[in-house]
Each structure stands twice: as C-alpha cells, then as structure tokens.
Amino acid sequence: MADRPPLDQHTLVLLVRPPDAPDMSDQQLDELQQQHLDFLASMREQGLMHAAGPFVGQPDERLRGMCLYRVGVEETRRLAAEDPSVRAGRMAVQVFSWYTRPGELRFGG
Image (cartoon, rainbow, N blue to C red):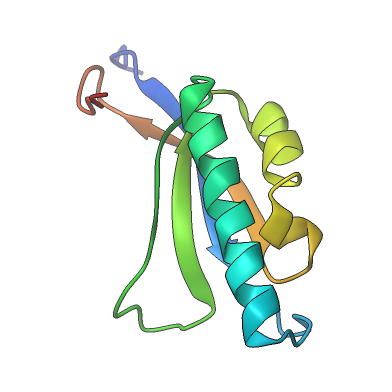
C-alpha cells in the first residue's frame, strides 16, 4: 500500500429540519433565528468554527445550512447541541469528519 499524504481534518455539521419540528409564531421564529445567529457568531469568536451559512436552492428543503468547526467530532456534537435552534427542535444536526489536502482551505478574519 502506497504512503498516503497527510490530510487536514475538519468537522462538518449539516443543519437539517426534522419532520417533527415544532410550529412557532413568526415572532418566535424571528427571536430563535437571532439566537441561532448569535450562537454561530460566538462559536466563530471563540475560534471553534471556521464558517457557517444557509443553503439556497437545495434540492431537499430539509437541508438548511452547514457549519465547519475547528474541533473534533465529539466536541462539535456537544457544541452543536447547544445551538438554540437545535435545543428548540427546529434543527437537528448531522456531524462528521471531512478531509482535505493540507492547506487546501484557508479562512480569513
């Protein structure tokens, strides 16, 4: 077996709308969305996340967005479970490792 080059490991989170997501008023959804955005900003400010953002035009509307964390899978699962949208049952997370060639991804600011 040939030697494989080293790979950079990232932790990917898919935010998925569960089929049993609770109904909420527009005001509740607006408040929850702000809490969700504040949570993501906090993860970036603490250096725990590279990037996050919503999907648009996805073929499956249940897929709402993704986050790319800088910590391992178990720590990411623990952190993502604290997202207000996850705690409220409006989102569920799928967490897994993703590998790239070394230095292939660069994140600024």
